[in-house]
Amino acid sequence: MTAEELLAGDPEATRLDELEANIAKAEAAYRADPKLAADFQETGWFAERVAAAKRGEAIWSEGRRQAEPAFKFAPQPGQLEVRLSPWAGWTGLRTEVLQQRTQLLEQRRPQLLQQIADQEATLRAQILDSRVRELGPLVTRANRLLLLAIHVRGPVPRTIRTPSGLAPASYREAVDELELVDAALGGWSLLEPLPLDMPAQVITASGIQRDTSPSPSVADVRRQHEQAVIRFGTHRG
Image 1 (cartoon, rainbow, N blue to C red):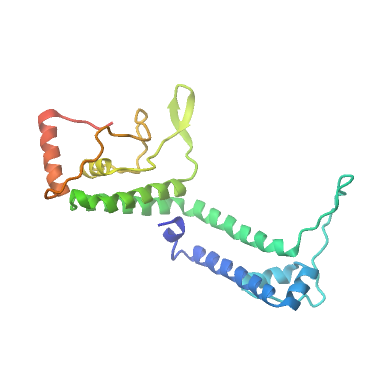
Image 2: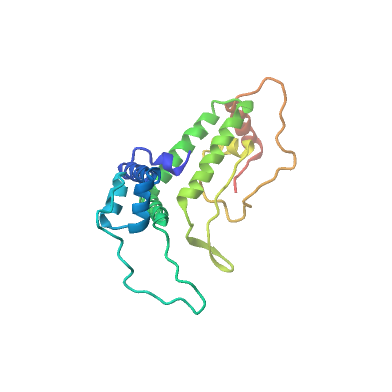
């Protein structure tokens, strides 16, 4: 899943999808007609042509022409004056759409992070009804959610005090079966910031053992975990 998929159905995201499709349609129309392409190359961009491109239309210049720059700067001695081709304008239009998508992501960030948190909570609930050898696909889904959260979260503000000053919080980038089960049993979210004394990557010495014996359910593992807590005590972080 991507941030764009999380925004599916959002009216503003739909508008941007349509705008991007219209720009591609208009460019294709210019390139498909040699005479229209020559007219476009000669006259460039003007207000009506920009508006038409955003509607998905290609139009003739009909006496209109792209305005010259208000200011011209003489090139350095020995340099040639270069004027960009009108075809470069299509990149500019797509860049505008990309900037609007970035702004939309900024505006929708709290809602998107809540969607990710809801999906992560649902995934952890599924762990309790799963068997150990069924955890692989769930780990894959969890890792995708973690990477998506990093993308949606954006730059993390410096809010953690360290001996050298403020630093941003650290978040998981990946999880394995052991930690996923631990989160499900302990009722804590994989999206939580990492404890200050916890490394971002944990490598277990023994790894994950797989066998062909009947696989217990996570609920069975949970009961064993609770019994171990009663006998020996445990804590996280």
